[in-house]
Length: 153
Ligand code: HEM
Image (cartoon, rainbow, N blue to C red):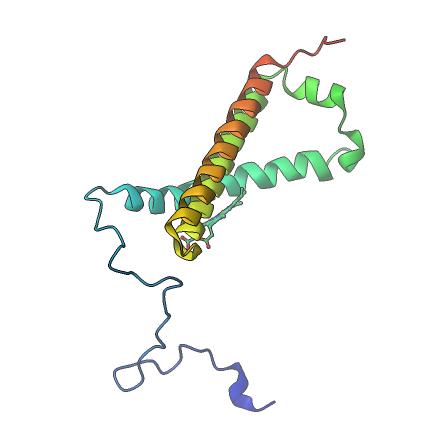
């Protein structure tokens, strides 16, 4: 290994040495829709950053409680869940985590589908599948959190 192998790819970038061009995964074509005249993608971009910050706290806290503290995953049982969901604080924690993770993940996958699916039909149906799975999971999860019955037999 030479001493220069640790030099970063962006070192020395300037007017005489421009940064390498990163090609978009899918080129615009004559059929690519024009700008939609709304700021939807801007708000989506901001949402990904803000929800990411909140998710760091919610997901790491969730993993710590479920998998690390008090004997790890072996303590997780119906009674453990019932005990936690007796508190509105943990119900709200899990509800917000569910909604943010699903909307964040779905919006991320929407971006990936828009970038990589070449044919209009493929793009449309992949997104319909994604939206259906997202709505189903968010509604089912929300229903479970709000209708959970610790005395079920
Ligand atoms: C734990 C904290 C998390 C942070 C800080 C975070 C942060 C981010 C950010 C900033 C982006 C935007 C990247 C870009 O626009 O180039 C992103 C994209 C994405 N995130 Fe997260 N995220 C987190 C959790 C999650 C979770 C739980 C999921 C799945 C449910 C997820 C799925 C995705 C997907 C699919 C993308 C799109 C990737 C892409 O465009 O290439 N993320 N994330």
